[in-house]
Length: 391
Image (cartoon, rainbow, N blue to C red; front, side, top):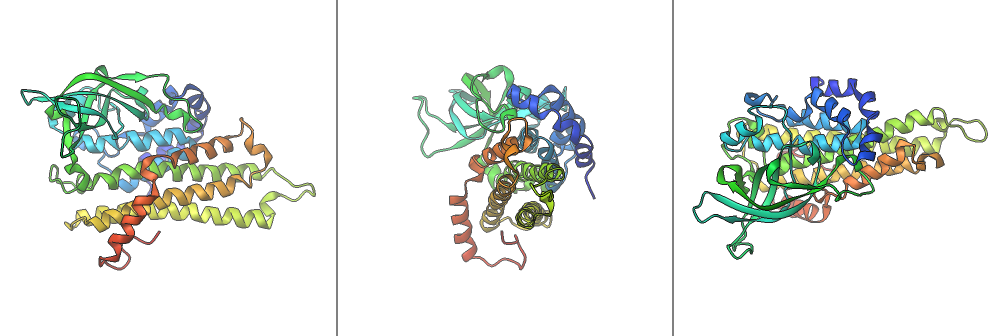
């Protein structure tokens, strides 16, 4: 059954698609795009119920991101990135949750998580002094708080040894957005600008350590909030790539209905084109199915009280990365069969092409180490038949 939020996105799809050009021109989501996302409730899917969220199944979240990206890749990207942050906020100190959501349960939180700065402990042990620069803060113009990754530092301003990483949370008043830092070839509308922090105090209750990465934190009882970080964070980003690929297929089919060759034959009846596009469509569908199946299996493991092993985590990441690349390759096969008019600036196909391939540049889609780790771990483990279907 389709989640109500997903259905709202589908119903508003044409209106959302109409915002894409303005968002790309502005270098951030347009106000109308933000309004449509807020009204649908997509950012609150993984938010705890006590703060106005839905605590939805992560598969429903993935479906919502795909539906959004189908009509506007940048809006889908924002939904996938910003929509994950309420999940981690649910693991934070209740005092911080009240600060963020107490007055407005629709408050959005930005990131990024890459360690772009140092967090130096204060002498009294009450918190950290933080400075740094963090690129790629997607949707940051529309957010009032930010999760930032940082390495614990020494008083001399160097990383502590052994290394220790934190996620820290700052209000908008404690960081600056570099408005001139986003000039890119694709996903223009995400507004993934740099944020700069200069000697800001972050109390300890606004920080969380790396234990969240492995899941089963016990901070909350719900299965959703005991999944590993790297089973939740990547699915939003990969879902955006898959959804945008579905959007490219949709637009291609719409355009090809009116396209004919010199002999009057419709291109949708040309066997070489239909074979290639049919194969690509199957790959996009397979990517969708595998991503949803994998996160569902992870959720079911947690819900049944079973341990999420390193092998499970490695195979889930393998599947997630594979889904992104498979969908993108399929989209590229569609684009090169779209005809010369597809390269015109006013044709949405060229924007989708750029957005999809830009989405692959995110570090979460880097296949090398992920595929190597999954092969090594799977070779020495026994899993139940059908666990994490092969990519």
